[in-house]
Amino acid sequence: MYTHDRRVTYSEISMKGFADIAQIAEYFQDCSVFQSEVLGMGLTYMNEHHLAWLLASWQIDVDTYPEMGCKVSVSTWPYKFDAAFGYRNFMLQDENGRRLAVANSQWILVDMENGHVVRITPEIAAHYPMEEKADMSYAPRKIAFREEKERLEPISVPKAFIDTNQHMNNAQYIRTALEFVPEDFHIRQVRVEYKKAAVLHDQLYPFIYKDDQIIKILLGDAEGQAYAVVEFKR
Image (cartoon, rainbow, N blue to C red):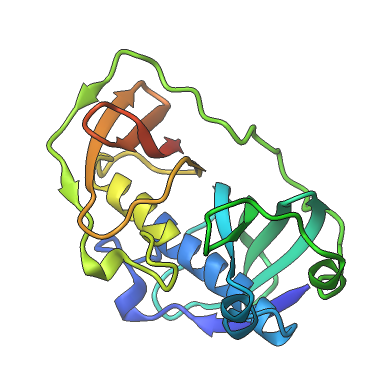
């Protein structure tokens, strides 16, 4: 397990005074990058071998949102490799060890020169010690989306959303989808299924489905082909 200690800063909190679900996703993905750097499998290695871990899905369950100034520990560990897929858990805890959030994620190893999925090599696997899966209720990776949905005006992907893979950053899909969630909808879980990577100036059309307990936002092209599907649950 790799653990990164930090404090929640003012720049990281929402207008409600705490780190929101998108910020927690950023904490988690940063922690996974930090672990890979420590293990010698960071950006330098991946760039030299033209490889990248692309996120296929998130499930983040939140017990308590951390407020500004809160001292937190962000932890991550892989628990399974299967062909080209890697599975990784995350945990967010306060300074007393109380769990604030827990997450599951699935990643795909991709050759960035040709875009092909690549089997995880023994060399890569040897750097990552496997641990037990986190104690949480695991939801399916795929998110069903009903045909009856409302399409809103598109959003152009700005430079601020682009990462070193020249793709829209994973957490920005969540942050974009949050714009369509009412303020009184208290989010306890987010799931994201990533379909294809959006790039600079792509037009993301939000398609929205709501009921009392769930809000689903499909961020897709004009025809409704998804870049990602984001599901928020009370």
